[in-house]
Image (tube, rainbow, N blue to C red; front, side, top):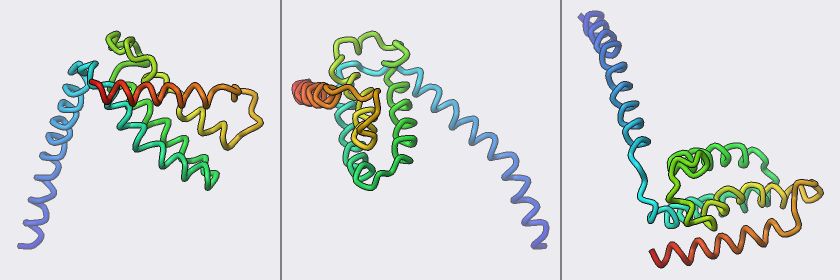
Length: 142
């Protein structure tokens, strides 16, 4: 009797799991296809950076380069969601301070670990801080 019950569960799982995956994928696809309201982007960028910057500070203190690899994936996911790297959302052109802050934060952090890298421009950190401040101000107004 126990064998039949386990077999029924296994068969049901084989039937239900692909259906659940299809529903999940269609939900993600629909979510990605839905255009984002550009006016919400500054707040989203500030929120994204607000969660990443404290973690990056820890990674810098611990000289943890693995953080940057994982954070790059999160940054690319964020930019794909909003379409600013692929230029799918031209309305974001109004917010260069926010797109640049999101794009530059990892480079600025890596330059704090690898201080002798030739890719680290002297004014990169200042430019990032200025863009971040402008993005925060804009997010507060919108």
